Image (cartoon, rainbow, N blue to C red; front, side, top):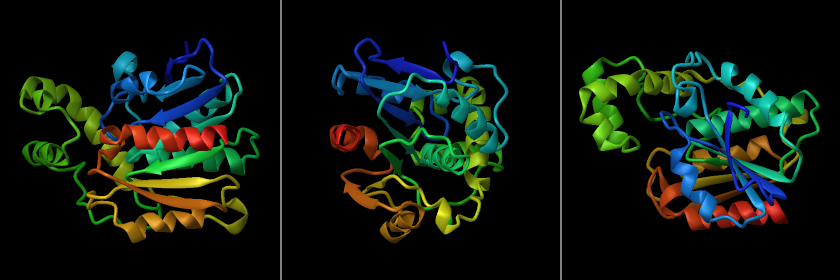
Length: 246
């Protein structure tokens, strides 16, 4: 078993969807997707260090500490047509995995890269930096973002367990500085940007800027807030399958 993944629907798989979760999340939010995809589609959910079966592992200090070993783990999977989706922090990781493999000349191109809930790398975020806030202020911001269950936030003992994971992920997200992309490093496969139509943190113009990173680009507005990919999962999965099988 590769510690980087939890794999669902592997028995009859001819296609693969790779999912990379948002900051502070483990693989669980994607588990129910396994029942929503066809039997011939494997769902490969990335598990970052420090959560799920990797609880207790050292937390990464930078995006590079995730991208290099994750890229290696993806290369080791049995080959089949695939797409990759990253949400929020996961979108930055997914882009860097695709970019680094392409720059290295690795012949493992996905059918498409989906970046969800995150503005283009060179665009300035209007969201405040929170990874170095005091305990109470950090906790309040996590509550506002509405991506962490209330039973974790309201229980100090439990929250303190997850605080390190959350701070680590937000540090990676907030300090991520993408390398300058030259024209010959533009991704040669489709890049699809997804945003929730009520997500104030992903303005449409800053999502549209992802078009600079691929030779083929499209932007889709779906119903919902920052976590629209779970509220509108049928629409998200439909778009993933279209790119996967066409």
